[in-house]
Length: 130
Image (cartoon, rainbow, N blue to C red):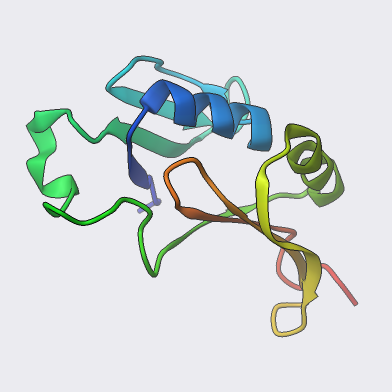
């Protein structure tokens, strides 16, 4: 089994652009209602985006509740943390917690907020630091 998270978005194309610009993900589907993003041109699927108003999956959103996945972090691990952190800064993404060492995991992390309010974390591999 492998995870294939799907986020509900107010603008699939806007969120897709954000994830491509900020994290360097690649569009593998494109569209206004649904998107698949991969880690590189031939890389694995790492994230799906689904339009909030597309009705074929009505259980994706709770009526009257905001998007943003309260209590959920969309977490990405990268072997090239310095490059991704630089890309994040260049893109002007909203940084919630800048680059720091997580002493429990002994790795680097940076915490962001995406256009729909989801918390996005990028980390280096577990045990990467000291």
